[in-house]
Amino acid sequence: MLKSGGFERKSKTSSEVPTSSLADIAFLLLIFFMVTTVFRSTQDRPITWPSAEAAERIDEKRENIIHVWVESNGDVWLNDRLTPMENVRQIVAPLYAQSDRRLVVSIRADVDVAYARVHQLQQQLQRAGAVRVVFATELERRMTRERR
Amino acid sequence: MAILNKKSKVSDEVPTSSTADIAFLLLIFFLVTTVFPKDMGLQVVLPEEQEQVEVSQRNILHIIVQPSGIVDVRRGESQQVQQLRPADIQGLWRQEVAANPNLIASVRTHPEAAYRFMVDVLDALQGAGAERISLQILE
Image 1 (tube, rainbow over the protein chains, first blue to last red):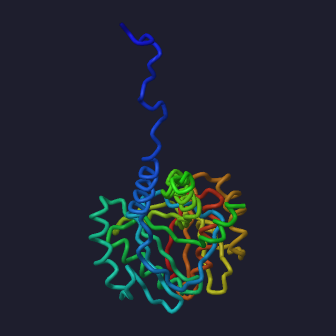
Image 2: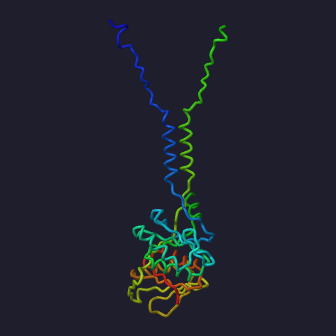
Image 3: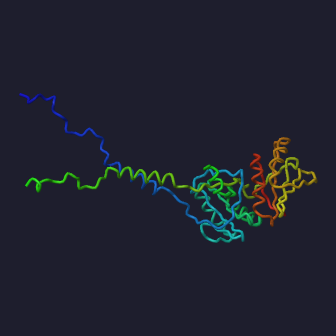
C-alpha cells in the first residue's frame, strides 16, 4: 500500500542553479588578467615628442618592440641605461636574433636633437641587422583624439 | 516563559550573495580604466648593410632638409632648386608621383638640422602615400 500515492512526493533536490561559486570564478578572472597583463618595463625619458599625422600603430607584439631614447643633449638610453652610441649595436644584435628577426626598434628622439645623432643610431641598428625601425611620435594627443 | 524562549529570526551570517557582483564590478572597472599606451610612429625599413641599388637620376626626387627647416627640392639631374616648407612636400609628391610612378624620394638631412624637420618631411611623404623613401645624411 502506498501512502497517498508516489506521485505527490516532492524531490528534495534544489531546482536552482548554484551561484555560490560565481565569486570564485570572478576572482579567478580578475587574477588571471592581473597576472597576464604586461606593463611597459622601461621608464620614460624626458623628451619632447615629435608629432606626425601619418603615424601608424606599430603592428607587432609588445615584447618584440624595443625603445631607444635620444634626449635633446644627444644621450642615448636603452633598457633604462645611458648607453654609449657605439654599444647600441652589441645590445640590439642579440635581441634581434632572439626575436626571430621580428624586432622593431622604436626611436624615441627629442624634436630638437641634431639629425647627425639619429643618423648614427640608424647606422648602429643597420649594423645590428635590425632594419625595422619606427620614428616614434606623440602618443597622448592621438589617443585623446581617438577617444573623442 | 514564552518571552525568554523566543529566538531571533535575523540570520547571524554575513550575506555573501553579492560578492560575485562586487567582484564583477571590480573586474569591469579595471578592464575599462586600464589604458595601454599605444606605440605610434612613422615606420620605415632600413636597407641591409652594404645594400646598394643603382637608380636612374630620372627617378629620384632630391629632398634636402636644411638646418633652418627649409627644404630644398631638386628633380633628378635638373639643377633647379625649389625651396619649400616641409608641409608643402605632400602636395608636391602627389604631383610628381602622378607624372612618374617609379619616383624615389631621397631625403638628405643636414647633420645640424633638428630631428623634427626630418620627421615633418617623412610625415608629409608617408601622408602622400610614398613608399620608396631613402633617408641619408647630407655630406
